[in-house]
Length: 130
Image 1 (cartoon, rainbow, N blue to C red):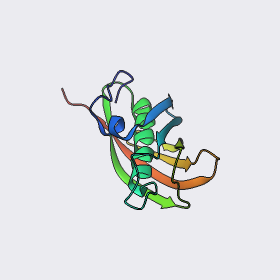
Image 2: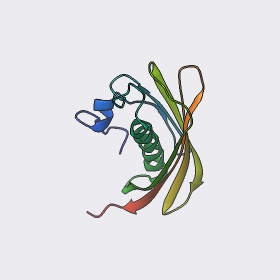
Image 3: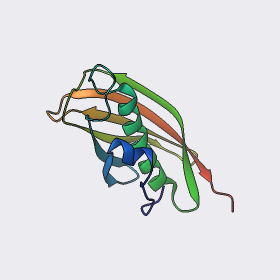
Image 4: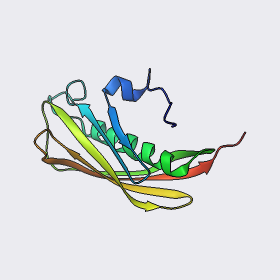
């Protein structure tokens, strides 16, 4: 994704994900709990995973640079706590920035700063064929 990529009509728009900072080394964003819950009213674990992969992918794309694309190839998420309301806030921090792979640790916290989820995301960096 480029800085000018539109999120209109994408999963990010439907889930209310807001990306607030993107560098190769770090990405930050947030997502509302409302609308992203499972049937019992708790934040869906898959929603946390989507937020984690989104931020890691944005950062990996910044690392990859022009003429390259990123493809998520691995996602691992551990859910520590639950959330019923408010927003969740996530930070993706680079663990490895290589020529063909970029790996990020992503933390997802609630409005009170309590850790809800820890994820690891690895993206493959590929050349775009014309």
